[in-house]
Length: 76
Image 1 (cartoon, rainbow, N blue to C red):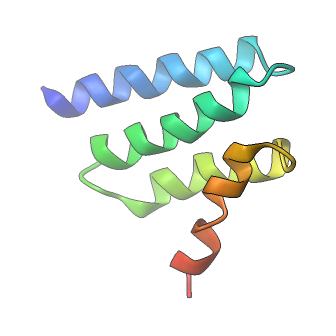
Image 2 (cartoon, rainbow, N blue to C red; image 1 turned 135 degrees about the vertical axis):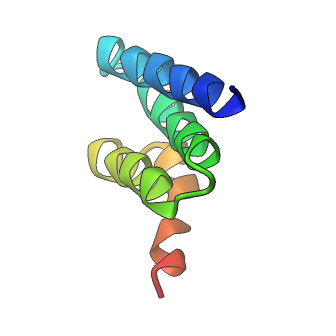
């Protein structure tokens, strides 16, 4: 049941990012979507990495991209 809540939260956050893609809310929403994906998938790193890479590619100058940059070190 808890995993389903994380899935719903991730879907909602990705929807926010899509709808408000040109605002500062988008990279933050994607960042937290990654967290929800990670927690909702029994800590599957791929779920986190996918959303955080999207933050880094789409919003490289945002503070959220800077926070998500730790993903680089995780793959080493």
